Image 1 (cartoon, rainbow, N blue to C red):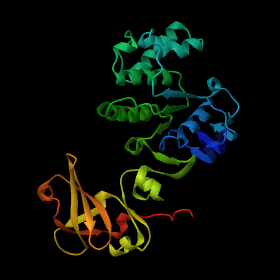
Image 2: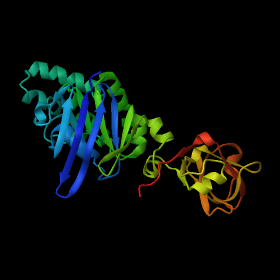
Image 3: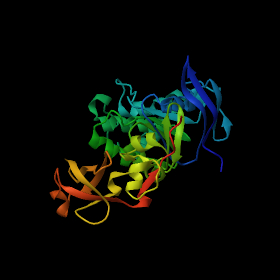
Length: 335
């Protein structure tokens, strides 16, 4: 199957700073693909190069089999949604959505019908005559989405579109975005620094660091099998085990990462003894930090806030066990 987006040897420098380092990447048609990484990791630069807002220093960009590397943004079969919405404050909702169609020369009756259909797709029917300042943040974001999809792009590029929303609204919009992408059936390329967001939404995730993709896979692959210390720490939370600590816990004598929900605590039985140093209440769960006896190391466990688990306290003695399959071996650090 032909890739929706194909990047080959993509490199971008700003003076002496390398933003993207010789990147090869394929994104498939109809895929919800996320580019995840901290600020300055290169993910937004890649998105801007795909959109045509930046030119690569070298390398090529192909969209649906066509080399578009030198083409301007308005000729590419993609559209972009930004974090700041970029709505026209003096125009109504329907006029904002119609704007691109009007520029493209679509007749009044046809563009009104297409704009109303796009607003229906993002659940904003009935708000056509409002101005952006009369809408909530989530509604403004949906107007921006409607304005992008009304042009019927083959791919939609989303640059941290939920970053300005509060947590509850962001979680709601995550669900709506996934439903919208599924109903449209087009390729979504989503840039975020929020690892929960990437894991929730994506078919595949590319984790960026220092201009490179350091791991590419499904959310489950990236979360359960992080390749190195950076990914284990950035995507979710992990305890990083040095080889001697891993061996003491019955694992291979190699650097390991273990997720807190995969650590088992018991009052007695097999395992490595330790003392609870901290119990952190998070609502549905307790995050429990344990100092391991004789190893100069601590490990974090996660237990649901049910049953006897709520009785654990600082100073309690526990036995710590980890199933071998629950820990991920890490690549050695570069010399």
